[in-house]
Length: 130
Image (cartoon, rainbow, N blue to C red; front, top):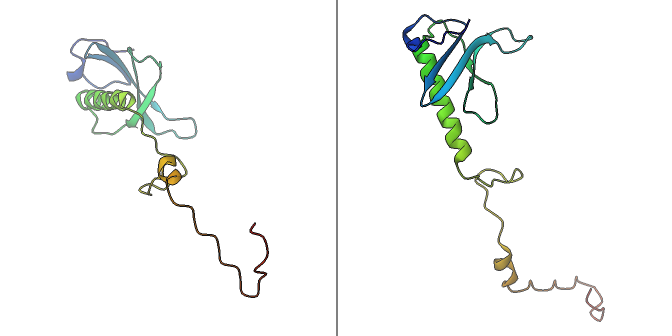
């Protein structure tokens, strides 16, 4: 049974409950991560989430209270929304973090051409350039 009471944060912790925060309804469920991993996690979904996704936030702890679970769920979701709204960062997967960015096309097009290599010793001086 889902506890939908308006003062649910002070109530006893159950396996399923809902609460409202900031005009959103959060539905929380305490259940296993998977069949092969039976430890219980707090899962939640949000009424305003356009992706209609369920999130596994953190493992169930004996110290969990309804108040701290609600606070952690809201903090996590608010941070997630902020990251989704932030401008995308363009970090190419092939570059090492902190590596210098390649020169732009403008910088290379104005650079002087490299000097042609000196012929090897004993080479044919009259040979045409390649």
